[in-house]
Image (cartoon, rainbow, N blue to C red; front, side, top):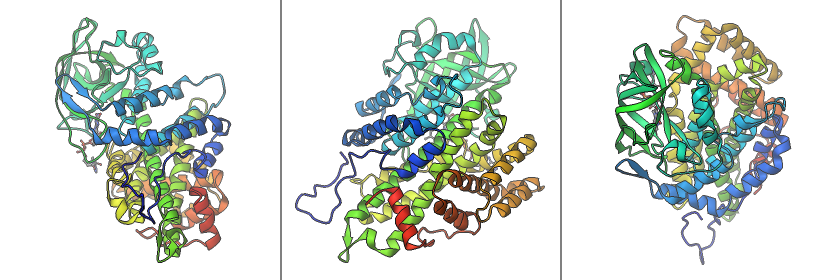
Length: 540
Ligand SMILES: Cc1cc2nc3c(=O)[nH]c(=O)nc-3n(C[C@H](O)[C@H](O)[C@H](O)COP(=O)(O)OP(=O)(O)OC[C@H]3O[C@@H](n4cnc5c(N)ncnc54)[C@H](O)[C@@H]3O)c2cc1C
């Protein structure tokens, strides 16, 4: 249970927000899932939402973050709560379910239903989701190596979490991490200096990684300079002969948030690795993978925003100031309604993007939409989250600033999704790159967004603006404005399809047609609309 002060005898202190169904208490999520083909899974999603909303799961989140991992020689020791969270996530298939969906069932909403679960899990604890998301994304790259797939995939497929430190072949289930970032180059992976030389069935790898999270994963996708150029490898914790592989962890990072998750600095001393994809194709090999981790960053940030909003609405529904509950005070209602509008947009946006991933295999237009929108959505949702979490914290007054509430953890957690897997500017450059290299498909995707959002305020202007920026010689200096407009347009389109008309209209009017104020609470919907927005967010 949240580490709350004892309120026995005290009055006017809200009860803990626990034992909630994270699905059925969230009308916005239900609508977004249904609009994107996942309505048939409502019962299963509610069962997941009930389980993850229990006091026990909130408590595991607390414990895992209050007792961060420690480096102990070749291993990292985690709090048992971290392992229990992973046991639950992996049993629910968050690391594989989109790959296991029956391909014969046309357009099965596998990404959408997995994302709905990921969104709910992220509300409770995000650190443990790092190896979960990396495992599911790594599968996209591993697919290039059928020989590896044949014996490793059954282990990855497993829903049994096995934290033991043993060779891959001996384990019931495995998790996969990734190491791209070096001291001299994170964004610029071509600056990587780690080297790989062919030897026998694999390569021997020497160098370092400046960030390598979830170091107790069983194997890592690594970029290193092979004789032919930058190449992707799978580096196991144990060599094929059963000896411990040459990964030497230097230390764990002391991070702002994401504290349940370990992020290491590591050196490779003649470490063994299998090549994944062709030599010199390292960047293209990891591209599919990175698209998936970026998608999960956005889904998780939308989940953080949702939990922050729920905590705020819960609090103001109980707390009285000047003899009136805060939720009845009109300025507070404006603040909450505007925050809820952004959560509506983020939720609709990520679920619609997941639908594009679901359809991408059979529909090239959806594939193009997924390619163009993933960086824009990651950019907008992940960079929107910290400000929203901060405002939600303030709704709790002093309690929001104290570790007894969940707000400090949500606040510390919020920025990382914008930084890792490509920071904000890098996402905007990627949007420009798609418009440049895949121009017809990107313009087609833009036109389909305009079609879905037709009739909403500001759509024509947004399309014109994006087209002007991406065609200009100095596109880079305006890339943030273009990426933001693109994401907001896509959100308006998603809301138009899946949310009540009033929500889509209000969002477009205040986010697309006009430049909105920096603070929440400056958009004031009609009283009945405010009521409707708050009811959709959480009944109070
Ligand atoms: C908690 C945590 C865990 C991590 N775990 C992993 C992991 O497991 N594996 C892994 O490989 N990496 C990991 N990383 C690294 C992370 O992916 C990188 O830090 C991130 O991609 C940014 O790279 P960088 O740190 O080298 O920053 P830089 O590349 O130096 O970028 C610094 C800033 O410059 C901006 N910038 C870059 N290029 C341009 C440009 N051309 N124009 C304008 N602006 C630009 C960026 O947007 C950024 O804001 C982790 C990072 C964190 C914080």
